[in-house]
Length: 97
Image (cartoon, rainbow, N blue to C red; front, top):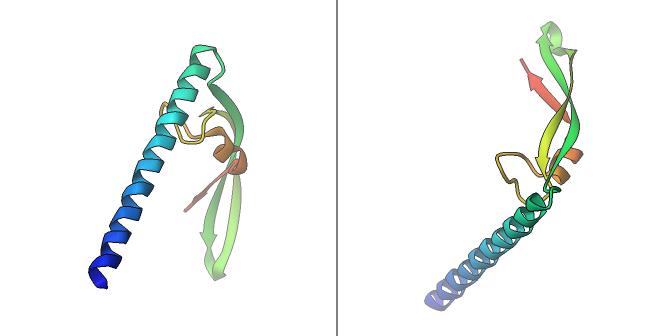
């Protein structure tokens, strides 16, 4: 019984790895086609906030500015940039000191 379960688990993990690899390769191919046509990269406005700890468990917030961050229009991060769908949902960059 234990060997059968281990075999099924290994088979399932192997299939999952193959599916994930195929998804990444397909996403990369679609992204490369978009880049070739001039639309594979985008920009998202981000805001930086710095948080400093004070005495008495108090926090002080400092506005760090805004900038346009480059992003890839794909499911996974490409070209060293984050995916636009992820960055759009996480526009604030919080740094704690």
